[in-house]
Length: 362
Image 1 (spheres, rainbow, N blue to C red):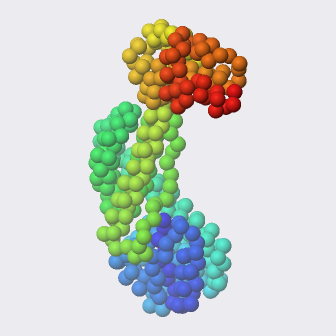
Image 2 (image 1 turned 120 degrees about the vertical axis):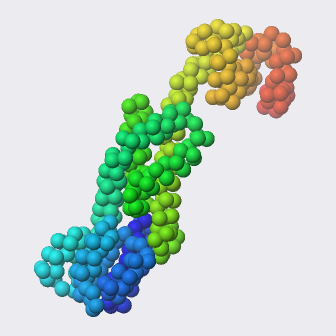
């Protein structure tokens, strides 16, 4: 969320611009207003904004001088100039001072929104690029941190990730060199670096992007701004780590799922027979114990329970759709002992085979 400061000596125009910003959507927050450039600078000494929308002609300090001061003191800010005067000199000087646009009054709502969107994109790109340069600057002396992250992520050790994030936040804070507004960009740059490393491990991860998170206060002091960006960075790292872990877990379980599906197919084919678990394990090239543990982990039931499930489902179908006697159904699904079959069936279906047929009117 980008915080907007509006500067204009006309209360009517300040109110109009304020309303437009407030109605522009979730990406922008009206942070404050000021009647001239001097008051705007005083406001900025105590508070924080990402974007400044300022009039050109104002008493005490005009918009051009304000823009010049912002460039010197708050270089991360993006400025939008508004004016009632279609004068080339004003527009030229505004562009020289890197204003993103020069808009004539009355300010068109759609034009303002498109300019805000352009400002937001410029902020994000500039911060990410600056953050990425800092990452490249400091990373060579911190390769061990990268190795730790890769190791924990590849092993999907979720319980160790919170400590990694706490340590990483302290490291990234130092890397900002006091430019705390770069924390979110650094967090994204770090996650994208991890994503590239994951690709080397044949794990495809989508690159990370995104804006800062919302915070429910219109006015932020310098201390609160630092806290805000730390919160943004932590959330970014948490979400990124969760995304990595989900992808790694998926990659780790895919081969297991294929093996379990093979086992299911074999059981579906031979469920009516006495199951030779050792032979079954050999057919999927696993030890019997590992095969049993893997099947239980993936399905929530043992192979024996799954075989019973298959037998009972087939028994239900035969009882419904055929004229076979109940003891013949038992033989069809692998039970030589009808009494044992009837007990298992009642436990599974709550009714004995004969009661089940009666309820169906068969």
